[in-house]
Image (tube, rainbow, N blue to C red; front, side, top):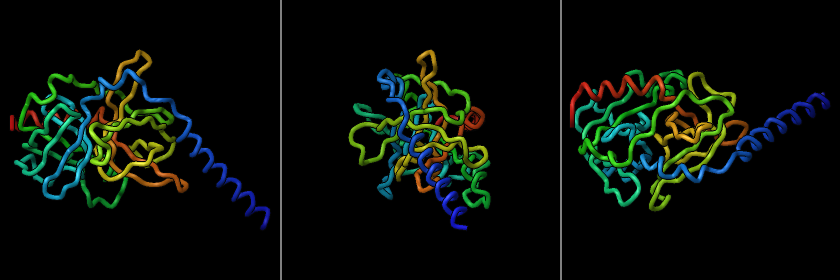
Length: 240
């Protein structure tokens, strides 16, 4: 019995060491990625003083987590919410908000709830961000692939924060687990890929956080299949 317990403890220690190694042994953020990532920004809620992160996916339209989107029942007008990219850009009012039709915050299955934790904000200025360009949406994230998280909490200062984090090979079905510690204000943050050709692609949106063997992880929802129907929904609804 003692030997069996010792083996089990050693196995746990080895798994923890592997998680530590995956989290720490990641490459530095590409120095030339900064300009391409300027579409990332912060969503600010005047009523609560809170914030989420988000990213422009077309001029005037921001992708974020559904739990950051007010319950507007199909995109009716919202008040007291603004989006900003890094200065010198000024904040702009959010006119409409949409949650993914399959998002259910009360769903009993956690993987189903967070898999569709995706929302869109339509800005009052339809041309906001047109000068920044948009980052194309890439294929789903792969286990073990390093992606770059760009978030902007209010405590981060004057511009978004960029970090490189590895993907883990385990997680809830339909979600992409990342070996990173995310905090309040980082929900909805975009994950980017740098391709072998040096291009930048938008891959996923942070939806939740948790722990694996006492180490923090984040779950992200891939965008390749989930984003286009939501953009169509916003287009059919018309301008703000």
